[in-house]
Image: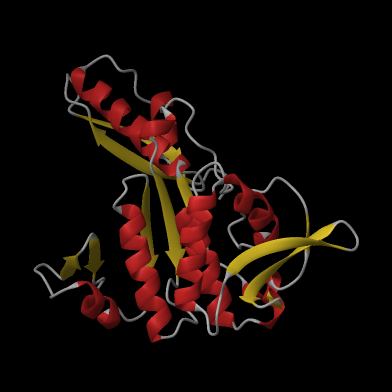
Length: 254
């Protein structure tokens, strides 16, 4: 127990076709490979290059699981970078609404498609005590605080905001060695359709496909039942996968 390790092996060619070494069982092994592989042979250099690409990809991952219970309350103003639980959504709206009017208008249109009642704008306003709260502008001077929205509406709104933003807004560690124009953000959403009704999950899936088509964001979402997604994106394909319009459904059957 004092020296817990796993025996790792990788193919490096050369005099020893397979290299083996113990690695800690509580650490991600890929970033540790440069400490074990000398890079003397072509095979070893290929291993190092693959490890580098994997580490860069993992640094560009944003795990998102919106928690509506924490999104309902006003939050202090901060960095304006969205947390994985979307607790500080109001602070992010306070920042992003003024940054890009075109992007915000598209976001409002997406919220309108997934929330009950009219939606003219999604905004944040300062409240007493140095905090901001998020609101839906219903038009004609009527506003609804996020605290009055349903569980599914809040999850839909938060995931839509994530899809419209990028590394500069989400709480991630972007890879500085990769030019900004070439960086791709991967959003991980476990329970992607949790709390969403039929219309909301279909709208969110179409939005994800549209945003991913631009090439700077990818979405990996896990659902308990993928039948609705298959119907939304196309006919079932081969090898347990289905896809159309940039969406692929992979069935993880036991």
